[in-house]
Length: 210
Image (cartoon, rainbow, N blue to C red; front, side, top):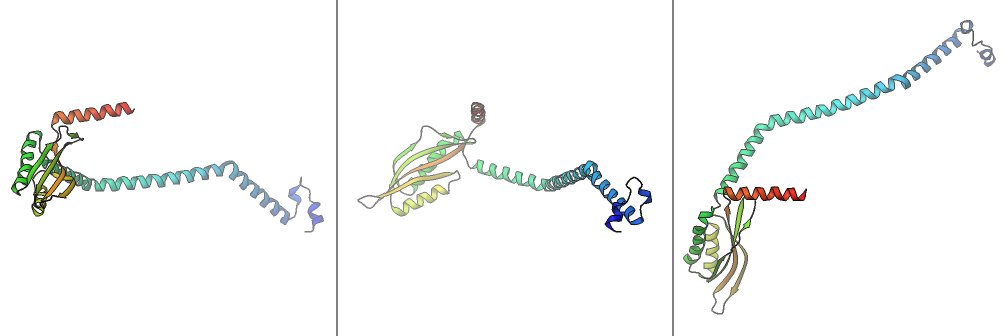
């Protein structure tokens, strides 16, 4: 059809139009209907579907994570039991308050057994308290041969209780003997009363910070 023929079509009497213009008008009406439906209804539904799919993905990931945790729970329990066992083993290496005097004697005897002369053996009057244990620094000064000094340090490391030598300083005297100044740190576990005091102090400290 020509442009003049299209202009001559009566919009009020579409039924009298030729087939092609009718089909064109029908297609245009259908297109407008689809666009209007999308803007007024379908767009919201599609967005809701997309949000639901995203939520489904999140829930699926959460489910798989929870499932993995459930499968691994026995391994976690065994790991926790192993940690508690290891902690208990370490704790047994710490003497109680009543055993500290015997441990100090062992340290002293370790030096005397190697022929060393103690010029100073001074346990600190104040212990450094931690959450589960107390640290007791001991200032020592011993004099003897070089190899005997090394053997003494080795004996200290082999004691059944934990003793660490810190701040070690070696000086050679005029007669060739070696003097060692050091701080021997030993540890003991806290008894129930001390643990209760530590927990109370930590709780009070948290309350002050709040």
